[in-house]
Image 1 (tube, one colour):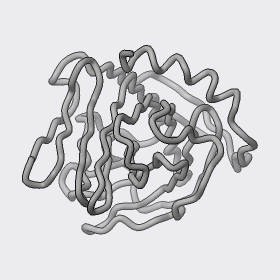
Image 2 (cartoon, one colour; image 1 turned 90 degrees about the vertical axis):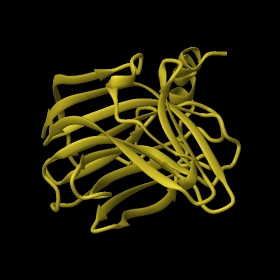
Image 3 (tube, helix red, strand yellow; image 1 turned 90 degrees about the horizontal axis):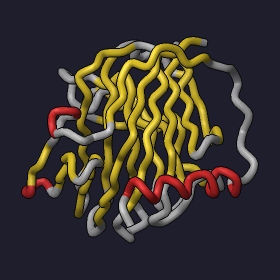
Length: 214
């Protein structure tokens, strides 16, 4: 079954999701800034380094992010933004459950790893993190959520970065939010990683970026 067809199962996952927390504030989606279907190699940064155990590239109409044995990597779009909503479909191919994959907002192309990270894992957890000066620290620690489809099921991620509010929605449900003022501008990103001894192989597709306001 192709990756694109599997996205159709998301409607069933949304209906089956359990109770979710209520947002502390609303937001409005504005102009569509980017629509990335990963049909062409130039649509997103690619990075392949067998020695580091990472392979991030556009493949078969999706963005395939692979990492193994303790590797972690991110790649960025060229579009600079301030307040945005980022949505993307994800589909995991690997069976190792202890992983991390998701999107970034306000990422820095000059200072590696700086920016905000919105991760989920194949065992049904999420985290929101801030990268600064070579370290990636939790703003929300890994937390279980019934809204996240586990193992190799598809998930739809939505990261909201509006003013100091950072919120992650999965399959239409808010799973967590926090506040941070360090970064106000940057790029969108895709990131994935796995502990030593494991591997992650995840496809991203139908990525959309909208301007947003509170």
